[in-house]
Amino acid sequence: MEWAHWTKINPRIVRAFIDKSGDTIGWLEKKGLSFEMIQYYPNQVPLVRHSVKGHGHALMKALRDSCQELGVEILTRTAGKKLLRDGQGRISGVIAESREQETVIETGCVIVATGGYGNNKEMLQKILAKL
Image (cartoon, rainbow, N blue to C red; front, side):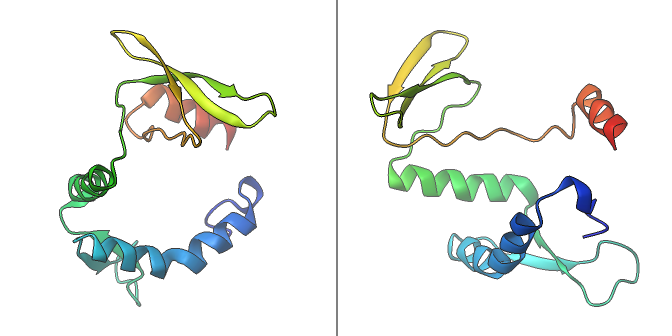
């Protein structure tokens, strides 16, 4: 927890992440991924980190293939602009915008996800300045 900057994270989320990590690895292996154990730092024993063979590309392909099998539509290069609510205040959809058009998507579930910011030097500097 000290390594993860205890004051900046929710310990319940970290505990849930740790408690479900084995289930997550097993689920991903069922999707066809394989892992190797690696170290965070030189000479670390025991090895504690699962690394996907094929790296991020293999992981994204397996997840995309799984979504396609389930009929999930993935929108890339599309910004979520507004969550829609029904008369009872429940999420009922989203207004999304791509380069070509604005789209209203009515649904019973919305998952908001975004890529990382590891290659965004400006955002990294902003985050690191707060630490």
